[in-house]
Image (cartoon, rainbow, N blue to C red; front, side, top):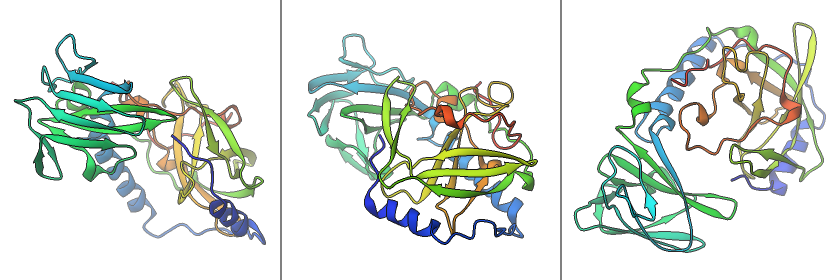
Length: 301
């Protein structure tokens, strides 16, 4: 899921921290509220789109070999989405990829082209996804395991979701923090909802103040070449007005030792919208006593 950090990322993070001017104040953009609202609209489109988290109806772990796929009883991979055909086809799985061959009455499409046989690899870009009617399929890898991820445009969770709910934009929750780098190559074991511990790049911590009190968050990287920091956190609103397991926040890589934590962009993990996501959970050090009254509210149903 997450890879160990490469030396280039580690060196870059140390470089931007050296000689830091972290006490300088980053000015609030003149169009700040418009920027946050645009971010929130993009976020909503990602959730309620045809391959958004609310449309996700299946995550099927695969074993090597040939397996039948479909909604009918007796299939090796039993699809559960409302648009799933009784027999989708067969899936020939190896350690690295899978080949999907459609059943006689099923039409597969990739990139606008009709195909009868298609290779699935992980990771895959959106243009590599495979469509079958109102379903969309792709391959994902978690550790050394492969899984078939399935979206459905008629998913009940998607059809019932009319939008996301957010706390009002408050510039006071755009907080400037100080980045303190860890030794290059450091990782942290992050638990996910599958009870797996994933070695995750952990380049440093960010310390910040709210109402005169200092807090800190461990910064993570989602991949070795990530262009932003990733924070998993819980706070005093978790399980009350915001999602109980915590929320996610992304921030640009540090510049001159400074990191902007914009909690107005704090968002719910995918598990808020589907039971078929493999969400990482906040580490113990990222449980804040602070109530972060900003960002996305809990709206699972």
